[in-house]
Image (cartoon, rainbow, N blue to C red):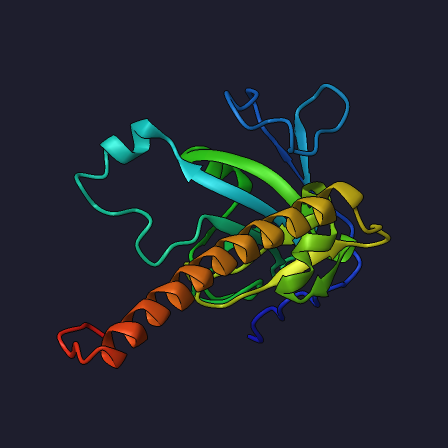
Length: 204
């Protein structure tokens, strides 16, 4: 049997598989797609969720580190039967590898919060984070951030407030560096004067 292929970075969502959540999640429901008031969860290939284990589930783990080799960032991957599996990105981003389960399976262990669908963003270099609003910028780095991956919402415009904040921070650091440099210059000048007077008992 041929394993399912990984979704393309900007592939359009396929016809959604529908999952029913019998009771609304206690937390983190704002980002989850729902259909009318029936709590039918529509998953699309390329959907990304953030996941956190519940305190109750952690308590039952008998001290096992549930986040070892686990990002808590899940990508919806289409299986051969047309259903959708949510797989963690630690071992591979959006492929058939990695820890996976159905939507219901993850919900039994903790909380899912919808982030974005890969078809709604374009890949971007990390430095561009300073140009876009937080709501349009996505840090999708995986394997505990060893592998960097960023995206910006399609059609997003540069954000004045975000750019201004970045420039102010750069200015603050530059002033701090300049003040430190001035202190070094003054200290070196004092030590050179001591050397001219024959004092070699100085620290360079």
